[in-house]
Amino acid sequence: MNQEQPTIAPICQTRSYINDFSFTNQDEETVTNGDLAGDYWVANMVFTRCPTVCNLMTSNMASSQADLQNKGLEIPIVSFTVDQTFDDPEQLRSYGENYNADFKSWHFLQEDIEAFTQESFAAVIEEDPEANDTIHSTQHYLIDPNGKVFRQYNGMDTDTASIAEDIEAVQEDDSQNI
Image (cartoon, rainbow, N blue to C red; front, side):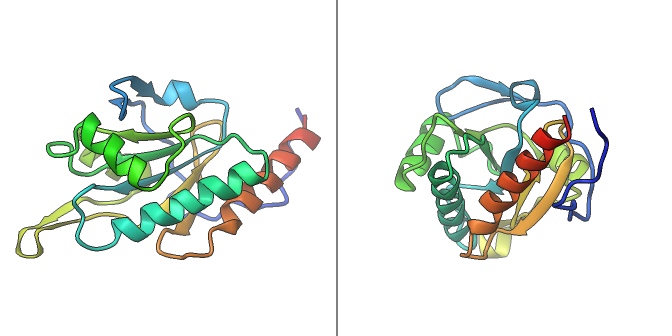
């Protein structure tokens, strides 16, 4: 394999690898990091009763999924809930349905992710009881086929086309470097 630098340079503060995980999705199926290995995939953190940022972030992720599908890219999307106590698989399925998530490629995962999030994304999860909220990352993360956090995007930005454009570019680079 040719080790040339990709045209799309990694832009991410963490540049860390995703820790091994085995979490339950909205269909009560186990999803692991091994299931995603070898593919680019996009991740974020949300929770279904979020009073602030999650609705916009999830709407933007749904737009990203549509952008990816419109380009013919079958890219897995993973939304990790930061409220594993309330967000059971049934709740996560209902939440995803509200955003017309295509569950063939979008997993809403439930598990205690506090340590996982800190180690994998250099992000914190912190309860804010006064606001009845949980503080968490608002980034959307692009993870490369080796499990490395490759890029991050502002999950609050409604211009979602850059994720699909970046994936298309890095996949093209990858195919030329084989």
